Length: 173
Image (cartoon, rainbow, N blue to C red; front, side, top):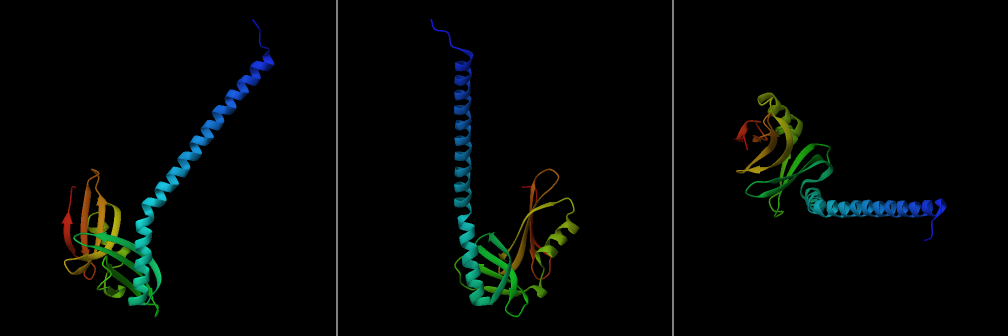
């Protein structure tokens, strides 16, 4: 039987360690690549909807500067934008998914996103706001506010864009 020297044993150990490290690096790179691909593919519809909504808002509402984009779905889907028009006025643009009948609102005549959040925080201080979106419900512009209470239950509020009054409330989901 042939005995291996300490140098040969160390060389074998180094090769094993190098192979393990290489395997770990390849595995981590594969995870990063696949995660990136998954993220990009999953966010593509939202990015495409935003791009199309901006084009429509520029054409029909003279939208110059975009501040926020919202995706609102109830019976119908709406894409909404807030920002400024060519004259520097604060506006909100609500676009049905079909692209027809674009609604342009003067922000001065209704609630801003921050004001809608403030209304919910005042009337429902126990709610932690998770999501807010602008859209249409029963032919009126509304802010949808979704939040969680201390029991981790979802609560859903629709606030009138014009008055700030609760149009619809669903709690404890």
